[in-house]
Each structure stands twice: as C-alpha cells, then as structure tokens.
Image 1 (cartoon, one colour):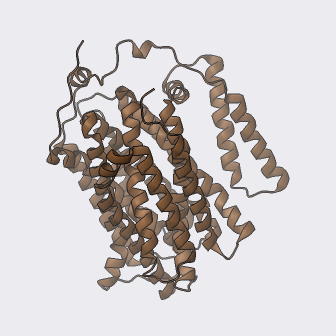
Image 2 (cartoon, helix red, strand yellow):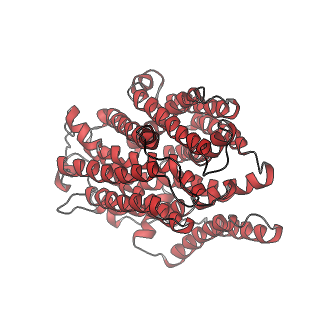
Image 3 (spheres, helix red, strand yellow):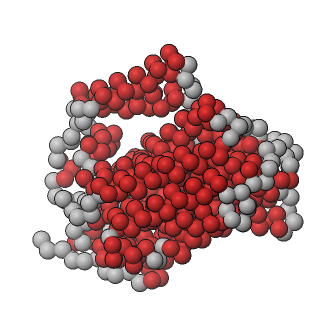
Length: 489
C-alpha cells in the first residue's frame, strides 16, 4: 500500500509542538543551577553532593524506557504522547514546590528524586512527539526550535534567583534555610511548567493511528507477533556487577559504588531470567529492543555516555568551584557564597542563551559538513570550555567558557536526535528514544557514585580538578563521533 507524506508544519505548528519544552527546561534550569546550592544550604559537604543526586538517575533508568515503550502503544481519547507529558508536568510542579521548602537534607533529596523522575516522564515523549508530528525533511527545524525553547527556558530558570536578588529579595538565609530568592524562583517554575505543557497539549492535535499508518509510521502488520530477542550477555553483566561489589567490600572503596555494582548485577539477572523463561511483556520487549538497537544508535550511545558525564560534572560542581575559587567563599550562610551561587545561575543562563541562538545555525552548518561532524566540532568546543573553567578566576571572564559550552549544548540537544530519527522505525520512536536516554542517565549514575570518592581520594579540598575530568570526557565524546555513520544500514 502506498504511503503519503506527513504535511509540512507551519512555523506556528512547530512552535506549538515544542512550546511545552520551554516549561520543562525552565524546571531543569532551576534544578541544575540551584540544587547543589540547596543541598549545601541544608548541610551537605561538597564531596557528598554527587551522591545526593543519585535517586534521579536510578529512577530514570527505569522510567525512560518504560515511558517510551508505553507511549508508543497509547492511542486513547487524549492522544498518544500527551497523557505522559501532562502527567509529568503536574508531578514536576509538585516537586518544584516542595524542594526548597524541605528543610531537611533527606527530604530535599526525595523531592529531587520526584522532580527528576517527573521531568523524565514529561521529556521523553516530547522528543518522540517532534518525530511524530514532522516529516523527515522538516525534523531538523523541529528539533532546532525545540532547542531554542530549551535554551530560553533554561535562561529564565537559571537567572531567576539572581533577578530576584536584584529586586531586593533576600538571597541569604540562616543555616538550614533556603533563601527566599531561590524559593520564589521554584514556585514560579512550577507554574510555568504546567502552563507551557498545557499550551502544547491543548493546541496540538496528534495524528490518529489510521493517519500514522497512512504516513507509513504506524505499527507494521505482524510486528507484535515477531519473536523477541533474548540477550545472552546476562552472565557477563552479572559477573561484572558482582565483581564490583566484591571489590568495594574487599578494598573498602566508596560505598556509593554499591549502587553501581548492584545495578549492573540486577541488569544481568533480568537478562538471564527473561532468557530462561522466554518471558513476554513490557520488560521483555524493552530488553529485546535494547538488544536490537540500530548500528547508528550504538555508535551514538558511546558519544552520548561521555557527553553527559561531562555535563553532570558541570551541573554538580560549578557552584562549589566558582564560589570557592572566584568568590573565595565556602560558608553557605555568607553573602559571598550566595553571590557566587547567583553568578553560577547567570553563567548557566548565558550558556543556555548561546544555545538558543546557536540552535538555528546548526542546521546550516550540518548541511555543509554533516550532522555527525557538526556535533563533533561542537563537543570539542565544549571540552575547551571546561579547560577555561579550570583556569579562569574572574567572574566576567567565566562567561567565555559558557560560549563554548552553550554551542556544545545546542548540538547535544539536537544533532543526536536528528541522526537517530532518520534511522529509527517510526512506530518505535518512543521506546528507542527512551532507551537512548538511558545513556544520559547512566553517566549521571556514574558521576553520582564515583566523583564523590574521586574528590575525597585525590583532591579533597580542591574541587576545581573536576573541570579537567569534564574536559577529558567531553573530548572523548567528540572522538567517539568519528565512528558514527549517518546513512541507514
């Protein structure tokens, strides 16, 4: 049966499809620029910061593939993707309201878990949503506009505390209390999250199953009856996880590594059990899809892993680095520390603003040198930005590395997905983007479990060297792009 092309979206149509990401990224901007500050205000030491972020990635490992799997199969009266990102927006808003009010470190970590899980629920279907609603030749523009909204939302989210400080709202507070400027920023973020996602939900009509089939993007006939693939690598992952657990116990390594070792072992056990029982259901289908990833996705996953390792180092450690080395402060109740923390928000806003501008230049460059080479060049620039963060000590000069990081961020948000959606089966956009995003979550878990121990072991009072680690892994991500082939196999 012949298929017809999806209609071209107008600019207004692309705007409506992507506008919800403005709210999602405003929330991410608040989280990335302020959560370490909140944790330190509640009494966390620098070397414990990464561990306190750990609940989010553990949850994301489960949430992302499941949401992708089920959103591919949801065809109800409220649409295919919309029920998921609306639910994620509501839960994220609740977490944004609770996080700065927690008052206790453990409770704040719990709200961060809820926020991270909810943002994953909202974000993953939005990536697939762009693929659903745009034809192949318009997809780069769709992701570029989405990247612009991501940059704009993050700019506002990152700069809100500093803006409120300028307006006379207190940016300091007694120990154990989050400053009013931060709390008000999170309340505004909650409202913006709900309203932005609601805009997309109410202005965009998703294509029906019949229309998707006519476009050649529906569930192929007989696809559900195809045999599942059961990975034989379960024993390897079980042995690797068990070996890491044994090393932690035997050598007295950082106990945070138990999380990583346990995760690897559970993954291996799941593969072994599914293969032995020839099981069916969502978990079996997700594992089967994971085992059958397209070659380009496997190639991109390596770059993605190193890229997001660097990004989580940036988000977790920029605040302690800037406050200690540029503003000369480690006392979280003092004015100098909070002035430095506000400046980190300005820095993050600046690189997101650069990303918003660069988003529309990337498709032009990609047409000349290709998506993969464009992404590689941007990642190399990001590595240079980390090196500048290592050596610069003037607050205004710190905006220079944010230019490089901003261009890299624009590419990170767009180029991998442009490459992926050209080679993924359309009826599995959700699951494969969910699985691909696991390679965002695993680096977060790695940083959360390892970096605290690295700091304690090698530079206990000198967190600036985390920026050198970030530069190295970002450069590794750029080199990994040399293996990526853009043509479909």
